[in-house]
Image 1 (tube, rainbow, N blue to C red):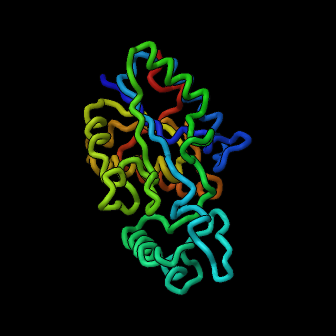
Image 2: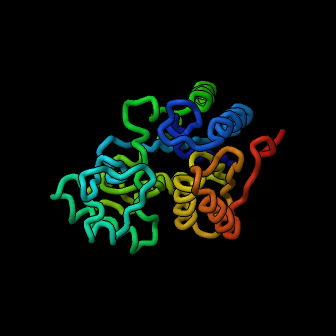
Image 3: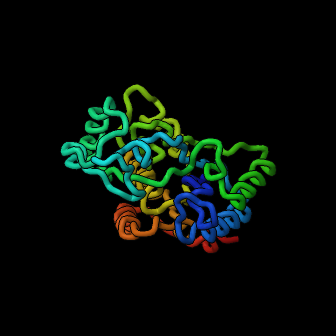
Length: 266
């Protein structure tokens, strides 16, 4: 049996430790359980894929990008709708960006993804917040050293014009940026696995979108090899219902769930 792990955004800025830009309640305890699981399974794991949310300050989903009628940026967690941009409630900081920003929020609406949400700047390249939580990073290093292997790190989110919750593709792929388009390499690698253990942050957003997209491309048979390690991922506070809906949807489609201590014992 070929077992692979897909660990989504296990980064410091999502931990619930001091200094985290976008703390997810329970994420640090999730990371401890995940690290223990990785250490226990060791060489039974054939491959590990780790996605890294990767941003810079100027980003369409960060406050710096937008201004209201009196020149103030939006507070974190503000949602910006098509009507907001059309009416001028929110406008890009640079007027020359208005049409592209309007096209973006319209595309989000039309494809049924999230309403544009403004997040605190997080997972900025070169900062502590972009790094993997230490306990997970150490477990990954031990796996690499013991097996003379390399973790497959997958960068997502660097394009400033689109949100990129899913590791498979951006919410609105940019035709000029291959990094925002369908990650066929990752999908093909996961197709080779007999089981794919899923973990990471946050359950309500990046985990949910990544798993849904993978399931769409793997098809019904492929979904049945997905196992969410449920006590190694948590929801963004205030978005718990999105996480519950994701679990309902995916278990109905055939995804399994397991606790870290109970997954592949012995």
